[in-house]
Length: 338
Image (cartoon, rainbow, N blue to C red):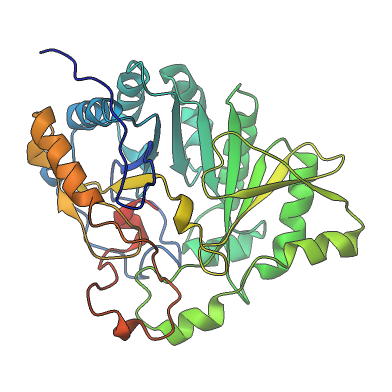
């Protein structure tokens, strides 16, 4: 079959989409408080989850539509036995310039080198606290030292960048922001402070109490006597990035609530069961699984999905019931892929 000519994927607001996040599994070995309910979730049966072949073929289709960056997410993507094969297959697609994985880090001691050898460029590691007790509480059972060991192993490999994703929750880990800033001084990583989002949060009043803006990071730097400078960072996505002068690493701010970045959104999300979401927050999604083997049908379906993408997510709208034409997603973060 003749390879289709590479195109540009653009929505009705003129935003060019060159980045796709693909959830390769909804399974996870943690139950983080902002990602999954305490009782867990019923996971998809294996035959409902995209196969490795389907994922690679789908990325080939997206590449022909101008996509250059792929992030593999979950659940916990490293739980897939074929994750290295998936990365290898994607790395062989010439148009794909960047492959990254978002992981909780628990398997990195064993898998980091294999991931790098397979062709992985970057790692995003979720870590919300340096306190073992708090970590166990926030993840509902996780072991902090395993993650720290995994970060140490990954840091010895020549990944383009290692990023630490830290969701700030008022009253739980906001007091540790200074510790994460110190970590960015001592380690060549990019610590990304992320605002707590109301995805799948049934009680918006409880979410509002736990939400806090992250701009206070600059006040913390001032109090510590640290000089901060803005920097450009390759593959930074929605993050505004900074560096504490003299530090080895950097830090970033992702603030979808206090300063939403929708006007520059360049990404689509694919769920583990093959549905494409044009916006993280809203319910609209459509399955593309049946179209993966037919590029023309796939392209048509993606263009239709992209045509429904809203100008912004209105995630923090105080009176969400006034939005009559759409409703928030039914999926939890672990079922979307972030």
